[in-house]
Length: 269
Image (cartoon, rainbow, N blue to C red; front, side, top):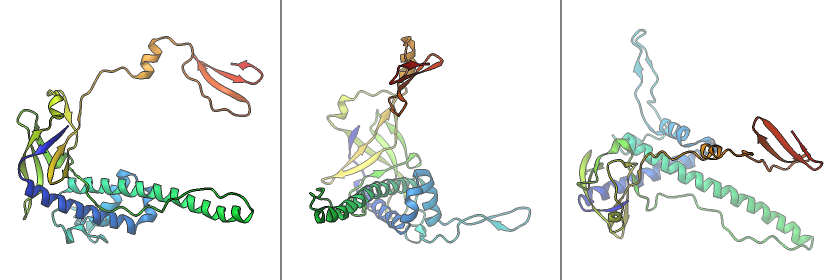
């Protein structure tokens, strides 16, 4: 569902600028640690990037009186530029940065394979063979660009489908605080009849031609039967067929407690 934002656009614009600046900051941190990127997923990458950027004070052991833990000296302290930056918003940015960097890395590796094809082409031409055609440049490392602001659960609350308002944590010029943002339905969203049984997922704000939009996805639990349960309810003879052809087996199918193998010479259980 997409709706117009009718109130507090100036605070949202300031928040958008900071959001993109922090996103660029984390993209730079990832670029400095590209050798670790292939090992990261969103969870391990978030933990690793927070250890590289978030300053935390050590705690005191009550029995020994000695400090332990903490992260007092990260190599890229985010609070040196953006003090008291909201944790949930930071994690939303980190997740976005990891996704962008992962996508770039996959495309870059694919392009590196094509560079190897280019080396092969030189040998093919020297041997009088036709070259393998491709025309593609290596992708550039991503920049923050015109990305929208994604709010995690701790940075938004109280969305009302009846009053068309939502509370968002934004930068007011001196501090981070919740403000009530008014939204107005678009012609498309008016056709979506949602009741209180629908639950909203994380909202995102996009700016297009100077107009801010609040985009929210809604979901509702349903009692739809799983396909496997539905299939079994029809009492089938064969549950599945594996067409992974090998030297001996043409196909393998489980048949109610037995495994049936289809081979060149015939069928065996």
